[in-house]
Image (cartoon, rainbow, N blue to C red; front, side, top):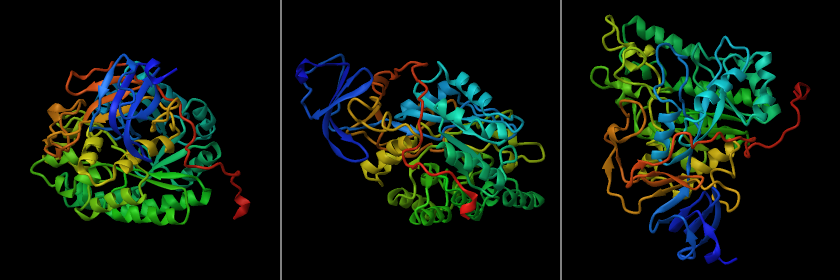
Length: 493
């Protein structure tokens, strides 16, 4: 059968197709939700198709994969309650070019099992998501029961867990971290680690509060870079003892990046993640009049500029960072019950920094901000934001690639010549009442977002045109970055 006789569901014509490996001008034929054919530019111009998208001059890339998104989570840190659910969060994702998210299923400290939390996450997401999704398990209580459930997690398509070295409601001791890492190694699970020294943080917070230094800007003072650097070094040492792959998430400091880089040069399976807030915002954003700085309270905190942001960019270029995620964790700002202003009281009119809900919205702005900055090669941009997340978390090559007959037809198509404009919260699609990137100029925004061959975002003709519930759970396998290993043997030491 010739190309002209093939009936495609959709053809993307004459785009500059960018993958992690190559850039070239191609047509893309889509059929039954898959990339069916990559052909030379204009080869499919006369083919039979239900929909033709002219992508002349535009970048055509695999859809973004945001592997660090908090949605519809219970109140784990006091009064704060994330405002985005699976409907509003994934709606925001597709408007920014993200076609798959990985959110969290958090185990509570009182729960001896992981499976109830996973079931609850499925219940919240099912029939509510605009884009495809999966879950990481947050482990806060690594009981024998929970650890023995790792094979069940793998059977149910979950191949990653997250643990914390801070926060009383989530923090694990080093021996508990070792238990998790041993099970993770045994069962082909990738472990994400929030690396901040919790005891140092508590001690610093007490010292600041004793002097009534409570305003939002002191959030950064309570968490100096050494907290992150020490915890990152310790996490790597624990991983090295077990020989387990680990990912240090939301890295913000050049000290932590240097520790990760050093481990990688010695061949350790250590991966790094950073986020746009550590590229485009600095500690000055916390030091705003009144309570305004609370909008930018996240953990780890924003750092000094330009040294730390420049180090994050350099880490993305040289391979220190494997992925770029948003750490989308949105709270309402103007809300005194579950939002940022719940930290304000009569005796603390500027709020208490330790009570400010930690997190910022960012799933929609992640790709436009970084692509507009033009500090990465287009191929490296795709690698960090799509292909590597797919490989690290067992989604590849179904996601993160454009391999005919294998990859889902998840695409983001960018305007060829878009006039620069400023980001405003009123134009975004999350449920938060602010964006920390208000006023930032961008010159790139998705023209179209396609998931499994269906256009779900058409910026010039309706915006959100996909349907709630179209998103599907994606069953993940083990990381393609992590090799099989023999059983861990304490006697080898």
